[in-house]
Length: 236
Image 1 (cartoon, one colour):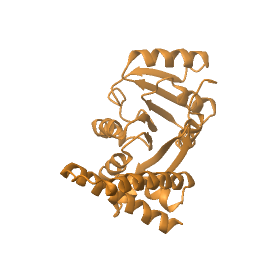
Image 2 (cartoon, rainbow, N blue to C red; image 1 turned 135 degrees about the vertical axis):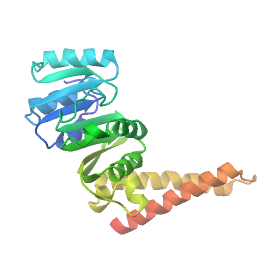
Image 3 (spheres, helix red, strand yellow; image 1 turned 180 degrees about the horizontal axis):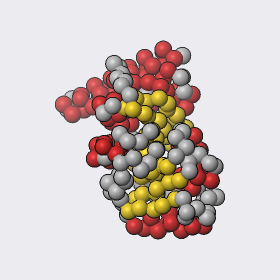
Image 4 (cartoon, one colour; image 1 turned 30 degrees about the vertical axis):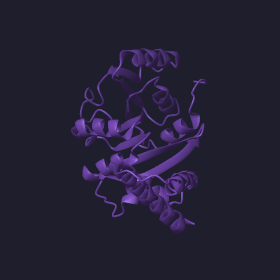
């Protein structure tokens, strides 16, 4: 376990698993998350699942080495396809883009509805995941954000319930993170604001006529810039 690259992110994910039951670790890779959860008594068991056989072999080797083969199973599965309804208390998905996580959630919606909680850590397009949750009978009850090796990671904990954000900025950046004035989010927003401003400034100085594509791109960036500016003003 000493060769875990993103320990801070792993700790953040683990801290958001609250069911204390069986965790379905989708896209388990080395199964380090499942192993940590069981070793610390935060889960009574786990099902480490992956679409590819090689990661499962690595996972099985790590599980055996940890002496946890009696309570952590490995299973070849495309998303939650091979997970039975009611088999897991927590469905955990991390290390994938938001579009892929959303696709997995859509295909496994019936199984998701039988779990107590979803713990999700999308690496991109997080707004897609938040929209999916609200459109399919889930609510976000907690979010964390950490920075590690120069990258920002968000972890979402959701349970069944009704919720909707009126402001699209809350889907993009996370209402919970905004309202709690999460300091890592604030750092991320300031970094994004600086990046976007430099692009907009360079565009404004461009002497050649702007193409329709460029104009559209700049319009999108300006909208993002104003969203961030508004959030930082409200939380400052």
